Length: 364
Image (cartoon, rainbow, N blue to C red; front, side, top):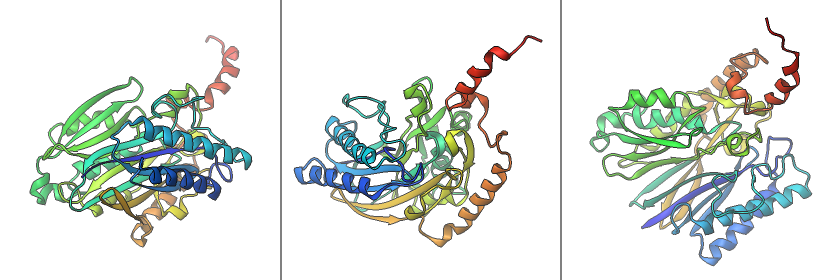
């Protein structure tokens, strides 16, 4: 059965500050998507949150980039924004960068990850959602999942993965893309994806069958708006089992926290900490950055789940490591490497301060 899995998210109001999601916004989202399911537009849906980001996970038969599905998400975010404004929540509607829907939410603020797939006999998917970080945050985990045999032993001992995977990489500043066949072009690819502030892994495909294995959001809010309006807080879908890495291999990269950009005002580096949904409330210095994982089995388009995949004591060490890394970075305060390099600070609140000082500079 061919279905489309769409994950669309937006920050449309934080409670309190930028740390959480008021239950009234989730209720409004639930009511809207329930109507869409009843009308037949959606097969199924799940509404959740990561930090202050509202997340819509939807299945349907409309294909990717479908106007009706995107308009549903846009209108629902708009109605949720009205609720947020009544509650005087922080940054109400901040990810809705356009005055009206224009056919596709891409380029209008919300983050989008979608894939059309032929549902297998057993279809396991993991939906990753992050808060207080940027779209390039998935580069290292996706590399580990689909390229690193020290993470994914299936690359070595499973014959159906020996052909490797094809990566679609986006240059988010030049709006260009390039494809790499791995493992043979792995080193060339690392030159680019090792710079996640500019290059993001958009999608991964099996070279055994050509089927899509992963899809992520690569939208950068600052480039769309031309100013700092909040961090991208990306989403990512990964299929598991069979010709793809096993669920345990898909989760394993997050047992080793890595440094991402984001945190306070999107101006700092911090560890990406894997947490249960209930713990995705970043309060310390608006962080550290969080990632949650919702696991589903698809059954004729129905979302059987979710299982809260990081609600597991096996990730306790990862959480402790992330907190230790956070302590180390916070000691640096306004100094790099905690603060982003100046080139990246151009997309934060820094330019306003620099303009104030410009006239005071003298030639030496």
